[in-house]
Amino acid sequence: MKRTKLLQMLNRMGVVFVRHGKKHDVYRQPTTRVETTIPRHDEIKEFTAKNIIKTLSIQNGET
Image 1 (cartoon, helix red, strand yellow):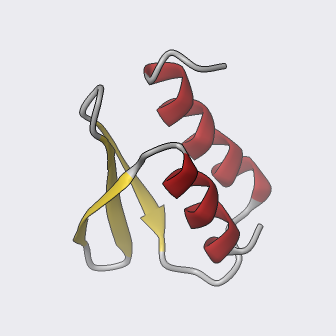
Image 2: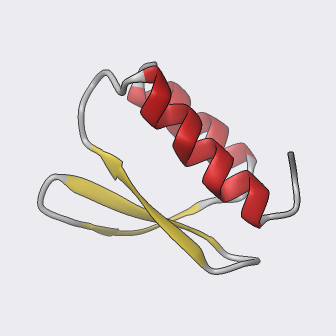
C-alpha cells in the first residue's frame, strides 16, 4: 500500500500527526490517545498497513 493512501485513510479516521522519529512518524487517535508509528517508506507492506488501521480503529470503537 502506498504511504500516501494510508495517511489519507488515517486522516479520514481523525488520526493526527504528533512528531517525527528517526525512521518513523508518530500518529495519535485524539479521542482515545492511542499512538502508533508509521514507517517513512513509499510502500508499506499490506500486513503492516492493516495492523495500523486495525489498532487505531478498534481503539476508537469502530470495526
